[in-house]
Image (cartoon, rainbow, N blue to C red; front, side):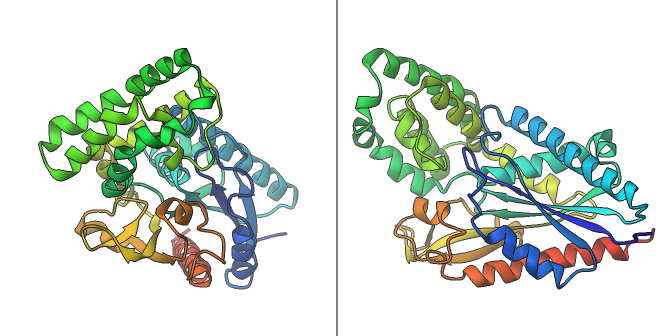
Length: 334
């Protein structure tokens, strides 16, 4: 009879990411954890092109897929007459981290966790996930130059398509922007998001291209999917509420690694792709130095050891945190 627990490392790529977004990172974690924890370690990578469109739909799709994976592992364990448990760690890059966080909250707030059968989510490691949205200084700079940049994409649309794209952008962004503006007043952050919202219709493609993993395709469907998916990032209150709810979920260990450049922005702070959290939650966020030439390249090359200066530290820290999650779970009274 098999009494060994199973540890599932479930990697969730960012919007429009692929099966190879994490490069060799999943394999490195699997090898190291196999030698560290008392469990049989499995790596699962969420299939390509499923984190798309409305965030709630993406969460529903991922939750269903995760339940299917847990069910398959449970069947294999039953065949071996295993009494072990299934531990699940979610590892999400970029918007994949938000999908993972929403999935944890979804299972916690309903009885749907029973669909995981013998499985239990024990933690979330996020990687450059914009829990508090994109760095507003970075977005403001890109939005201000968006009109010039989007002209470079002019050959992708005719005039009619561009008009529809602008309307699509407006529909996708207006509601969340209005909510943020009404509650945040006239502070600096709100003004910068206002600038972003003001140009998003004309520069929809250029702005979304900075947020998405891949270049936008020359179709209106892709433009709509990008803007629908990222519109939640403009709901600043909702972003904060998500993180605060997440850290209140029992028996979940959460940390977010974020990339920063070795140079300062106009406010004399390190350049980052994501907006950093409030001071009281800063302990959850771990900086990782990148040698990339800008914030976007740093974000998309996070798992490239040639671009991420502390790649080995990122691996080692991820292993340590994952090991702590397993130890916490296995120490719990049965």
